[in-house]
Image 1 (cartoon, rainbow, N blue to C red):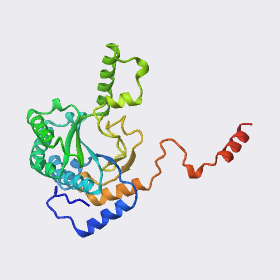
Image 2: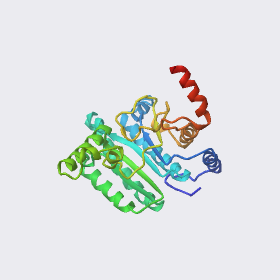
Image 3: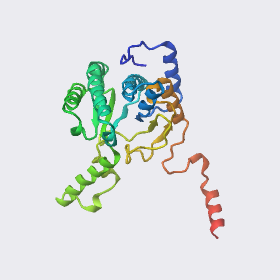
Image 4: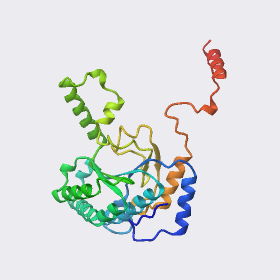
Amino acid sequence: MKEFTLTNNVQTESDKKLQEQVVDGGSIPEHIAIIMDGNGRWAQTKGNVRIFGHKAGVDSVRDVTESCAQLGVKHLTLYAFSTENWNRPSIEVSGLMKILVQSLRDEADRLHENNIKFVTIGQIERLPKKCQEQIKEVTELTKDNDHFQLCLALSYSGRWDITEAVKKISHRVKSGELSPDDINDDLISSHLSTADIPDPDLIIRTSGEYRISNFLLWQLAYSELYITKTYWPDFRRDELYEAIKSYQGRDRRYGKVKKSSYNKSASSAVVNQIIS
């Protein structure tokens, strides 16, 4: 395993062994996407205001990013702020933006030193100017890194993403560059904000909610889902390993039948008997 030092703790030998077991257990997802939920409720259970939970969640981001990079995951996308989150109280939104700026400042050099590329998706132009400037600075600093990519979804929604793709394709059809018959799944995917990122293999949602919350609606068509009741500030690498183990135990058929359970001649005979 490659050594990464995004967190303040030195990796233990027991954790290295756990990672080896995960790697030996099956394929590692190329792209993991996480709906980081439960920060506010975590804070309230401890008698604190919601922003305290958002601040605590930064430690989980560090730990999960580090462990993904160590395991060989190539892409990690974190749902950090949705378009719907703009409807939250202004004091909470303001606090979130300050945490974002400070976190990017604190982590920029470590991301770069560990060959991690930082990108964002979403309506970045809606963010405060200081956020936009800090995002631009870290993105530029890490643009040539190629070991691992960390993507933050900020002011993002899946419906917005699809709507923008439809607009772009419509303009190309209107200009005569494309015909309606040229429109297919690949074309739509190439016009989404994630055009340069493979679709997620594994979607993790913390806090126990069973919904997608407008996240990567097109991209997660065949993603495996893992739901945990753990609030995001308590989600650490050990539970990430459990999510990956769950993923490794699943049969990803993409609508097909598993070959080992399919006998063509026998199946044809049964079908003919049923429909005769």
